[in-house]
Length: 85
Image 1 (tube, helix red, strand yellow):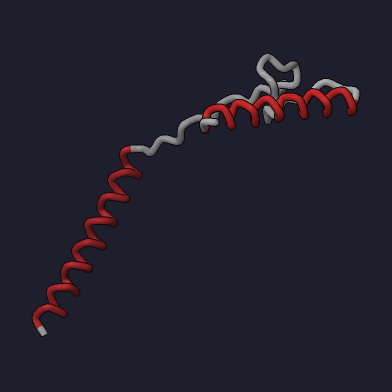
Image 2 (cartoon, helix red, strand yellow):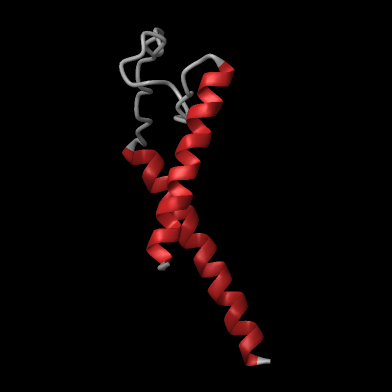
C-alpha cells in the first residue's frame, strides 16, 4: 500500500464523516468566509467626502525653512564646539 493510497483512503473517510455531520445537524455546511459578502446591501450607506488637502502658504513654508536653517546652524555650531574639545 503506497502513501498516495493511504491519503486517498483518509480523504474518503473525511468526506464520509462530513456528510454524516451534515445529515445529523440537519443543515448545510457553513462556508468559512469571513467579512461582508461581495455585493452586500449592508455596505456603508453614509458617504463621507474626502478631506481637503491642507496646503502650506509660501510665507509659512519660508518661515519653516528659516527656522530649520537656524536649528541646523545651532546644531552644527555645538557639534563643532564639542569636537574641538
